[in-house]
Picture 1 (cartoon, rainbow, N blue to C red):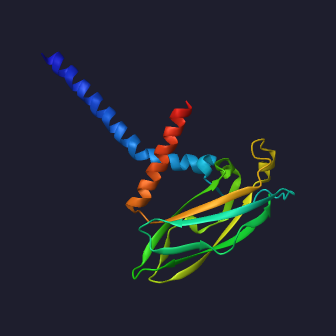
Picture 2: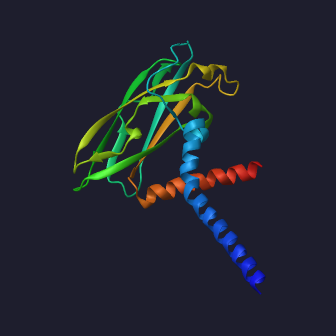
Picture 3: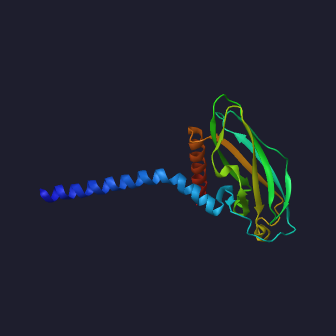
Length: 200
């Protein structure tokens, strides 16, 4: 009888441990996926650098386009302050965006970003960007936000991207820590998981 009870306790402990691990994995899946994307450039996630380390500018001209959006519950006006720009691979480029809080209350925003084509993410480096931190805008405040970036010259050696002429940099502003931000992140993760499962 005692042997049966001991076995039951072991089985119960194993099941509880397994359930705990599964819960932990579900909570960590999105943050880990975000980290993986940042490191590898998967799904168009751009890279972050303290400075331009390429030290080489090549005659490989690319057009950089900008796409801006806000979540439906975000009462901000947000746009790029210039149209498409041309840049040589390896050269630093500075552009500017503006955001205005159209509400009567302070709002903290977080920008989600990527580039297309998605494969270009690992070559697109930002050295300065409003997307690196949360932005707090007071009621009806308007701000100008610089973005400094460069495209790694190694893109010209990538057989899949050597003829690429246009990269689109996209931003969407969400209320920081809002359900809409979490839902968008979860959808992004689910869509990628579905694509990976289909590919396999």
